[in-house]
Amino acid sequence: MKKTVFIALLILTALSSCVPKEKKYFLKELTFSESITPEQKIKLSAYLIPTDQQYEWQKLELTAFIHFGINTFTGREWGDGKEDPILFNPTDFNAEQWVVSLREAGFKMIILTAKHHDGFCLWPTATTKHSIQSSPWRDGNGDIVREVKNACDKYGMKFGVYLSPWDRNAESYGDSPQYNTMFVEQLKELLTNYGEVHEVWFDGANGEGPNGKRQIYDWTRFYHVIDSLQPKAVKAIMGNDVRWVGNESGLGRETEWSVTPLNPDINETIITENKRLNINPTAKDLGSRNLIAEAKTLYWYPSEVDVSIRPGWFYHPEQDHQVKTLQQLVDIYYQSVGMNSVLLLNIPPDKRGLLHEVDVARLKELGIFLKNTFENNKINNGNIAWSAKSGDFKEFTNNSDIINTVMLQEDIKKGQRVEVFKIEGFINNEWKKLAEGTTIGYKRLLKFDDCTPSKIRVTILETRDKANILAVGAYRAPAIAANSDELNLSDLPKDKWRVKNNNPLIVDLGETVSLKGFTYKPAVEKESVFNYVFSVSEDGKLWTELKKDEFSNIKNNPIPQFVKLDNNVVAKFFRFETIIGTDGGKPSVTIDQIGILTKD
Image 1 (cartoon, helix red, strand yellow):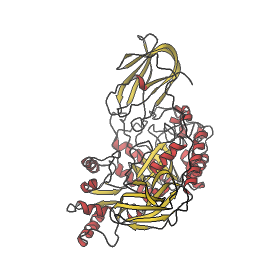
Image 2: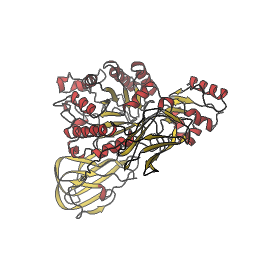
Image 3: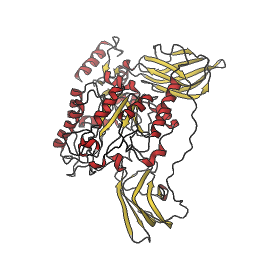
Image 4: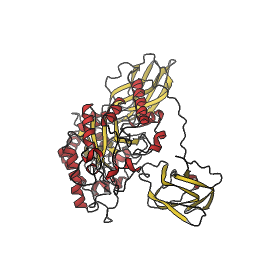
């Protein structure tokens, strides 16, 4: 940090304009002196660049998340750590099937959930018995991490690990020094026994331990282990190399800056600064001029967009018909990779230990679509780099082809600088605007209606210092057939339902039915239910409690929740009671948010 401050001061002293003529760049981090002006901060921010590891990560574009573990066999999203390891027993596990399916679709890396919040480890660890060694799979001699890494090596796929800091099984969780030592040992096992690891993924989940205390994670220590054992790996989300985009819907920001004052909340200094600037991973503005003017330090901290191909993150057979459509996946691609981010798409293996046929088919469709769209650049000389100050433009000749997509790339090894741009097409002897945008960064994709311009013009309207454009492309994305399947949230029509009480919600179904489950649909722009109790009655007086549980991860992934009952139950009334909401409140629930399942 002292080095970056010193260089910045040298530049300010030597150059009144604050533009470094000798192209001195700041690697990953830039701290300003107190005397610097807002305009000087903006100019210096243009010279902040990624590390080699961050740049190599950005070029991957498509990476895969693999959520596989004890939850696969219990049907839950978040296990409670009390699961019997005997449940883990995939019948036809094949890591090569995962890797081959993903590689053919264009993915470059797999990140495996080596341990989720339930604490069940997918490798033979010396730190806990709650692991694959205690399962019947491979007679307790298996190693999922090993087999996935071997398959990645065989087919040229990069490999990363997700290791949940939150551990609902560990007795030491909440006893911070003791648990941190155990966690470090788990990190060391994963980072020393399996060859090169390219990404280490932490989330910030942090529940109470058995002693009622929250764990204080020693992030500095964790970082040191990663940097010393796997120096080429990027540290993601609660790491300081790659940040979370702020949602689990596959949506990047319209204005996505990799140069930002935001850093993960790993110590009090950073927490205080993030609060002062009123920024967090979900903030809309992470890199504007106004924000930089107030910042003390800037970081190269690019965005990763994580989303699941299914509603849930783990495999649930009832979601086989809810796999995202090709159109949905393409939209996600444009709003993640096409908005200066890397897409981390989750594809959860089933109980067999295979990627399900529906998922594989959809991945294949996506791979074909991307290849057909982007393999043929319709303009000439699009790969010749050029620079531009505000107001400059460059024209490209089209080969008389129909286009509906334009791709722009900055040379981020020289910083991210473009603030506003527009794309025009020369059609019928006049220039017509096709698209416009703000940031570009590593890659920006813009869609518009089919047209056949003879020329394309790219104008850089506003930029921080000279923009360095690496490539321009024009393409025709093929049309995608519409999919009209609608999600059924209730097998029982609500015309006979009568609300008997609002809080808790008590409903008379109007007839006695055999219940197999229920659904809950979070309300838009309203706190969601986290912990709940679901009860039924035949007469509205004597109640039987059927479920007292949580909607895991609903805060970050507010999708309809499907809850299957252990046994069919005959009832005429149901009662849904909120224990606590996602923001600590006790949100009410309406009849429109609950559905009743009576079919398999």
